[in-house]
Image 1 (cartoon, rainbow, N blue to C red):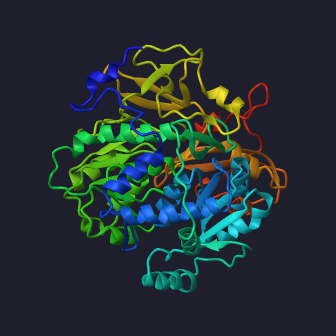
Image 2 (image 1 turned 30 degrees about the vertical axis):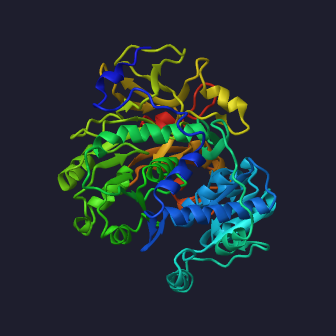
Image 3 (image 1 turned 90 degrees about the vertical axis):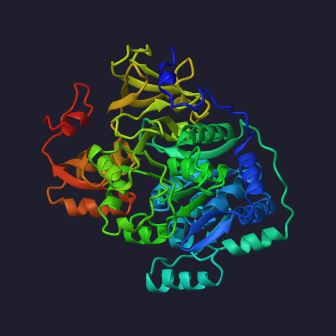
Length: 557
């Protein structure tokens, strides 16, 4: 296969990166801790921690985990929004020789239980705001060690005020009880009295379990090795370097970390890439609070903002947007969902910097393709394959299709996962004999190597950049005693790109949409919940009885 995209690369971008540059993510982190000790690494709610502090705190917390006798390679979950403890937790877990399991803090008990059981997690770091969720199911899991963080943990005296406001004024912490837990700061203090034992890790050791629905609705852990993450950080850095080159006026790159770090796009591009380049990441715990986000970002000369279309749109529509300093903005990365042309145009008019749209998946750590960082206008494509990445557009028989013809986007490169955690059958379904990962997305490639997504092979729904799998929604709704049949589809939505719509055949004539909305509220996290419900007397089916979601989605019935 000829790599026709290479001729479209901007000057200075290499065809290949060296994935062996670092033996592990840990080695990459420790280099930055040594080289940038005095620089601020992350900021949150007005408090900054320097690279030297991130080094010391993560070493102490890692020592605490080791002192509990947790064996090397064990899985440790993190369940919190973007707060200072998140990068500390990631660094601690990896440096101590363990595997990070990222968990969405808004998960319901049902969703959390599945992920903790499937990963076999032995410990968890959780923000107290979500402890009640863990309380409901922890007895059904292998979790033996619970570290509970508070919003104010790493904020010194100010933290007492922050915790008072969060608990008493805003009432954001439901009552909880987790016998035997330890506070985050207490674990760090205890760890300081232990001897931290550095762990040598190799490229093929597991670093993260990143949960995704894959091609079916059951959440599976994409097994991301150290080399997968190292490669994607180096690929992303090589891709963005042309925009960052020759900017001696910028002494530290400042990245907006508004996308949640439990999402693989933010983990790599906002978290690890920021650390690799000695940058400052400004953590936004609640990106839905646009006014609060803008307030937190004031005073920073922002150089990089990775975001999804909905966040760009919300920022542009805020009357306070003009208060932000974009005078040094180099790159606005768009990913997770399609960037709408109208949003891209308005963003460029306001900031004079284009949104650089890219594409990736949990299974590819995540970045696969991206538009050049030097472009000045919206292309409507997901860009070119990154260095060391091959994209092959294939038909159902696994044959490459001619340029300009649609087919499944298949990906080979050092960032592609080792497989799904403990699911060789599912892994076999998505890997080709010659080592390409089948994305389930349908795209076309033009003669310059640019890829455009034209359809999704699977029925996945994309809500604000998050994958929602109809199977999971249908499984939950079907448990309602008043439901006879259900189909879940994605419909266009101005705010979130797509929203979940249910088509229901009633078993109980008295069933209402309000009954179903409240039923879903306790069983599905916010972005998965249906926004629309339509009752039908029957649903369209194939000759073997399979419900035809596509016909419902396209309005053909």
